[in-house]
Amino acid sequence: MKKQISLGVLFLLCLLPLCAQQSLLPTPASMRLAKGTFVIGKDIRVQGSNGYTAQLGAQLQAELRTLASSASSSPGSIRLSIDKESAMPKEGYSLIITPTDVLLQASDEAGLFYAKEALLQLARSGKGVLGACRIEDSPRYEWRGFMLDESRHFFGKEKVKQYLDIMASLRLNVFHWHLTDEPGWRIEIKRYPKLTSEGSVGNWHDPKAPAAFYTQEDIKEIVAYAAQRHIMVIPEFDMPGHATAVCRSYPEISGGGEGKWEHFTFHPCKEETYQFISNVLDEIVSLFPAPYIHIGGDEVHYGNQSWFTDPDIQQFIRDKKLQNETGLEHYFIRRAADIVASKGKTMIGWDEVVDAGVSPQKAVIMWWRHDRKHQLVKALENGFRVIMTPRRPLYADFVQYATHKVGRTWNGYNPIEDIYRFPAPIIHLTKDYENQVMGMQFSLWTERVADIKRLDFMTFPRLIAVAEAAWTPEKAKECSSFMRKLPSFLEYLDTLGIYYFNPFDPASTPEPDAPAKEDVLQNG
Image (cartoon, rainbow, N blue to C red):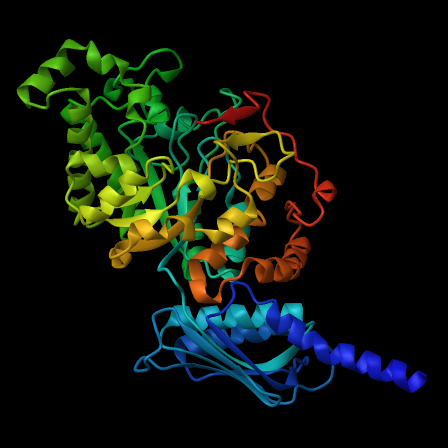
């Protein structure tokens, strides 16, 4: 009987590495299991030939020592290698684990970094024991993004860094940073100090909240932190609408607006407006090395009432033969695109920009209006590159479970399963335009996300599903398998103190409170 028990325990121990391998998220394109295990000991040796491989190897060695299964010696070494002449795809990697050695290979630095992150995830899941295997992996999409709105509520650089760490583990590579909007301006611009002394005061539920913003040194620190994790940071400077924080700080460039939409737009006809935008962009461009600047370009009609009555604006429309106020909006977008291009960057805009007459060489489109699939098709047919972030299922401010009360709905909500299946329901719309689809993004608007607890709750675990949908090839995806592996990553989030929604036990994670202002927003 004792022998049977001992054999049973041994069998379970042998299964542990196998279970760990199956828990790797995002699911790799190819994984072949083999016999044996590699045990990470405290004396683990990690070797990189020189330069980046040596630097990354030293980092990996320190990280693995915290995950070592015992004080015993490791059976062999871990080696990192970059071969720029290999046929491995961009950002792709291979990870070969044998009982005596581990080899991480890639053709570029990003791929090697992802191999490191995959190895760390396996080591965490296996408690320092790695099952022998061979993984060949590369991403489905080049753009695997997460957007955080800090205009409506501000969370600070330590929280942003924590999210960048988690994004790196999930092989997400774009952080879209929504830093300007109606409630607040969140980035220091030295030429225009009132943007922070006045524009950063308030948030979505408290217009008198103390000023909160990132200094330029903060921005540099976060951008560098992201770059070390192969994450590109894209700033968003909203125009011509969603400009309230700017225009209340500098009303001379305000385009008016009525009631709660006062100061919502820039003045579209003053040259001072475009000079202001150019000057601000000079400082933004100096802080963000990414090739893109997001300018918004959406929902201008909310606050352009003054455009219809202002005699100077009406005369400008006639003089420029713009036909109407929509034509004026498009004129503004074209001017903005030219300014961004003059700074050596490419403009990104929401899908309204498709109709503005901007050259596809000057702009990338984010398709967000899920109920306007024709905008996606039109963008592709007109030659634009497109990033998919439709409200359903990729907006994180939507409710994620049937009993949740706070958040958006639109003929349904955004459960993790719908996110995981994306983009399958709309993939037929992109047929023959696959090369123009850059990827996908999870976007978190924070009207009802005022604190860290709720931020975590609305982000996780759905961001994990986004990561797999953006990375894993369709043929390797399987929702039930993903859900079986998910608890392993949730355990990692536990170690970070993340308050995530638990889809396996909803009662264990009650929905956090939200700001007491219009608790539920539907269809908008």
